[in-house]
Amino acid sequence: MTVSITTHGPCRLAGMAQKFVTPMLARLQRENSFIIRNTAKCFLCEMIEKEDIMTEDSGSHDNVLDHPMVLDCIFHPRPVDGSSPMSDKEVMIPVTQTVSIGTCFHMVDSLAPVVLFFHGNGEIVSDYDDLGRVYNSRGINFIVVDYRGYGRSTGSPTVSAMMTDCRTIFSFVRRWLTQNGFIGPLTVMGRSLGSASALELADQFPSECHGLIIESGFAYAGELLRVLGIEPHVIGFQETRGFNNLDKMKSWHGPCLIIHAEFDHIIPFTDGQALFDACPSQEKKLVKIPGANHNDIFMRGLDLYMAEIESAVDPSGSCLPQG
Image (cartoon, rainbow, N blue to C red; front, top):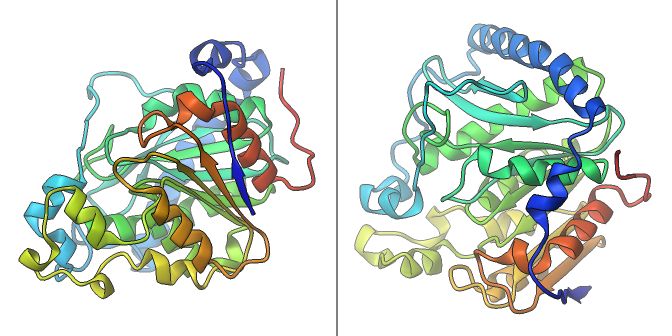
């Protein structure tokens, strides 16, 4: 099923978000703060004992996508001021003994569905503070994740590390949800570069993911490299040595929502169509946002964008706006 979204005028994200900060939500965030931070400490100790946490600073070093020329184009880390205080919703998730990843838990209700979100390569967790409140207003718990070197995260980003870190983060999040009584269905979601992390989790943990949402995702790494100014043959890249997003999508049989801008100038709509076509699920949907490009997709399609996500994560329709 393909749906075209038509909107009129700019989104009202900033104005909408402010009214969603209710006393109930603020209280819940304060209550969760200590629990989340304490869970991180226990998680690190247990994972080290089980030797499940890496002792080195990155994953495999033979990934051609870890070539310095590629890393300079793929990753654009933007650290935050280390002296600024962390909010009650933020937590550092340990992925090695020396590296932690910044995340933000926008939690609204223990029965609500949960979206674990991996953002694009030029964004950081705090860029999603307003959108987190929008998710909460629709009765959705929203957990957004950084990459190494982004936001408050330590370390330096590589493709190998990104792909291994997402699995460690997934384990941490699932454990925290269970320990704290959050029983809503868990959907993994990735935007742009984050589509690789989301598809990796769907591929590795299909029985533990209720659904998969890909927004502005790429099917072919080689074509993306060309857009970024790198000829794949120069670094010896072959699609079989890349992210394998398309192959991973071919194995996903659960609920799947793909959202893509009509005029995406970085990752063309045809990539979204290819991912949709590859998915064998009987519960899949492709949403095209007319007139939008890679960077204004929220502005041109926020209301229906969120409506489609709400429907995907909670097909029963039990999500209700808070406040």
